[in-house]
Image (tube, rainbow, N blue to C red):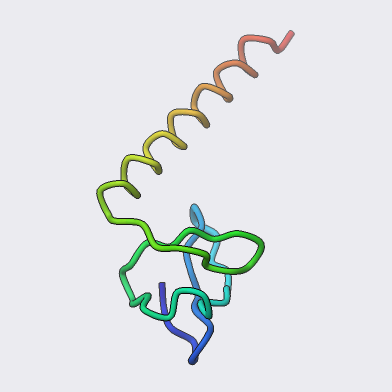
Length: 73
């Protein structure tokens, strides 16, 4: 995350960089993990929980790819 002003930050969402409002989490700093919903950071999450969540998302993506490959003719 990089701070782009008082209420804006650029975050990395799985490799996609997006500018979001941080007006609801004014304590967020560079390096923090935030929960983003429709262009707004709505909460913060601790690094350990963020890593576990990101790992689960990765596993889901792999399972989805594998399922698509198995169902392809």
